[in-house]
Image (cartoon, rainbow, N blue to C red; front, side):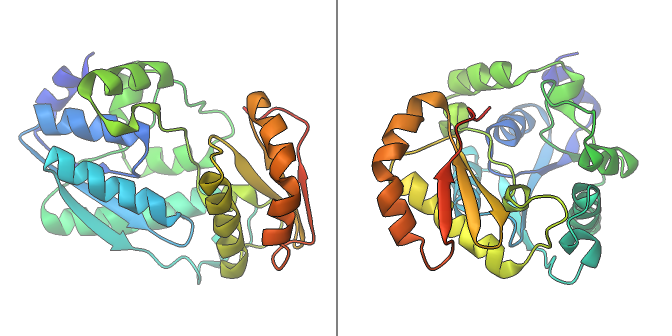
Amino acid sequence: MELKEFFSQYKKIAVAFSGGADSAYLLSCAKKYALDVKAYFLKSSFQPEFELEDALRLADELSVKLCVINVDLSKNTEILKNTELRCYYCKQNMFGVLKERADADGYYIIADGTNASDSLSDRPGMRALKEMGVLSPLRACGLTKDDIYRLSKEEGLFTCNKPSYSCLATRIPTGMAITGDMLKKIERAEMLLFSLGFSDFRFRVESPDRAKIQLRREQHAEAEKYIGKIREWLKDDFSQISIDKEVFR
């Protein structure tokens, strides 16, 4: 099945739009093939501000209606405990809010940007989406991450080479409680790394005052040049910061 055929079955659809490459391509196809599409961006403390900026920019370029929904996760203890089921509870919460708003707007079908490269094993968040009836057209049509980058470039989307950027909570080890303060520290650190020219990396917390930077191999040498300055700039947030010798994938 191709996306054109998929959208011929669902003429009116809500797209869960994160601002990333996958949901951006999905939204562009929905705009092209569906009769009525509306994008929903779920904003919480787990998303960095630049994701919202990218979402607003792309929605404007595609002339798609974008609804930004602020979601407060600070009182959901199941999420904040950060167990192995954190993503399950988070998706339940976030998409529950989205579904309620989309239903009120008259959009009863919700699609997300899960693609054919996304593994379904050990992904509790995927299970939550399935239970809630969220559709994944990219996956249903067999489109991989590489396909999406290639097709996005053909469509002229600025997200055509945007690296995957999972939520900030994934930087905190399972079992370590999530706090708003820690999420702000992680976002601050990653914005610093972006400003230094790094891309496709993760700033992983190991303990409340210790963290490591994961990068692709070709960025390791450059990171070594900056590590002293990075430690100095972030000394109020973390007493120890190291570069992970393992290659980030």
